Length: 410
Image 1: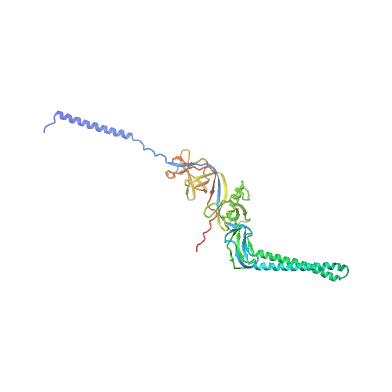
Image 2: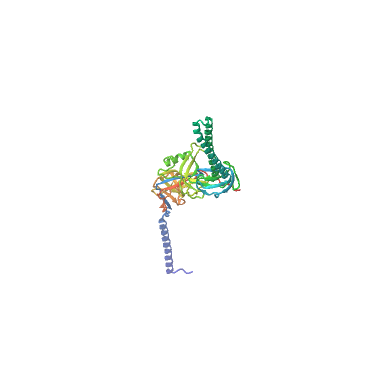
């Protein structure tokens, strides 16, 4: 084998030096790169929607199930007996006072009236004759042409005939009343129920029920409240008369379809004793009913003012976390940390809770984005556009009495 020439040996020497230099340079670069490695960037705080609590006056209302009742319920009965001749109203109609409702056969009463008038005329004629006889007897007695006994008999006859005239007049009046009673009129304004006796039926005087008349304007609404609730109610009203301090009627009604009755009621009656079995009192409200929208026996909801709070704090329902009977919200402090805060809220106002304890005015509460962070974490608060307004609001709580049971079918 031939040995490499001098030029070839020099080439290989230069190649080994280049490899060593390249390797060393790569090692230096790797060491430098490792020395310049930085820490990973921290994630940005999660963005959450918040509101600032603003005090506002609120009146809290409660609902009670009530039932309407006619102020006057009149049983319509005929004062005379006979065959019912006709019915002059439509069942369930609104009637006015003195409107004709029923007519009993009048012929017997017309005949009785004519007979009574004839008897009266006969008695009056007899009285006139007695007066004339007495007038003739007086001068004869002075002349002693007749005895005192004959004169006394003439005087007695005149007085007897005068009494007979008065008796006949009474009979005529009685016959006129019976004839008038044969026509049955409405004793007051109201709504008449269906007739229980149809034309051709026999009516017994004062015992046969013809129909029932219910007054509807105004109308009573009865419901029950607890003794403590009644104390709160009087405190809100400022007096036991059922009027609010400004004179307006505070009781509102909701019909069974959820609509509002246009007229408001006033407290009319509070029972004198508490029912020992339920601890409640009977309360009655009088409500104007000019349109006859309410009928006796109808179920309604009575909206009762429970209390007033001039500086109430409200938070949206979605901001409140409820767990094992406790309620809490997340409050954002000056350091933007969201910390949990236990609260007490018993009353709902639409979609909001009315806070009784746990929060103060001007505190910032998380409304949306609660699932984005852990308790105590730093957040990025964004003020909600639909923050609570400071206008007064009325609220309705959970009904204080259970709704009436639906009637069973069949």
